[in-house]
Image (cartoon, rainbow, N blue to C red; front, side, top):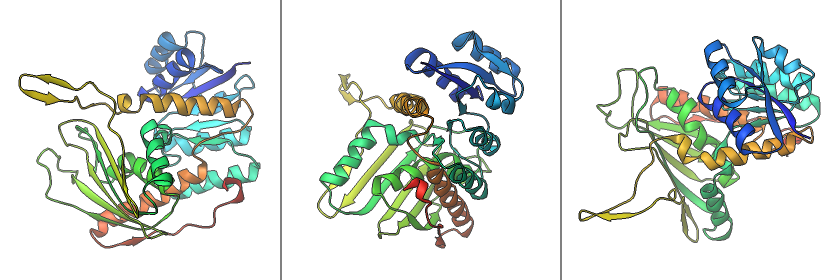
Length: 336
């Protein structure tokens, strides 16, 4: 039996997930769509879900008895309301990051899910499903010995004029915050931010690049370069330095060419291309769990920890070089 899915938010990622569920994966069908932009939702329906009902009110869609599960792909400020509504309705919910735009909002979701007594929420941290990161996690387990240091980089070709300095944390570093914690099976205890000389391509509201230093409870020191106007492409790097060896995230598969006295490999420019398989795997995982009335993958607790850490990193931006402590309450048994 195919799950009946409702998608809230039909921008780029909402449209892509609708395509993915209806044209690539099995086990679910998008039967309802909602978006504040009528042209957006009508375009998504016409291209990927011609039989879907269009809802002006996302809450009405969530509560509709014909809807089995929900994807929240709307503007980040709306996530908390819609995820809480899905929990109240007892329906599995896949929420694109961020789970909520504040740590307090994410904590409210955690408390609501714990009160419900079962996992219902999966957060869209797709890097946990990337074959390269999975191979890296296996190498940390089998090859490197206990991790000592991590060197990472998150480089975007360019960002728009509305992108500001804190967005380098909440919209960009947020992926490293989650995936490195998962790789190391560790939690963060402090954050520092340093600003090198500013790139001339960064506009006046953005300090770019920046270096974020995180320390974990086990004593691992992590440095992450965030450079969102690097110009040359979309480039994700990660190297784990352990007691017995070093493991490095593999480069995306590409064809190496020899031409005009040059040996070269192409570099991707679009994050959707870099992690396209990961999106397939994470949604397949969600559909499988949702068919059982629950959720899999990254949890609401993971979303909450990411939000707390991101808030600390933004505070560290303002403190510039001064460590900011990160503290967490005890993890609820539901997420053990």
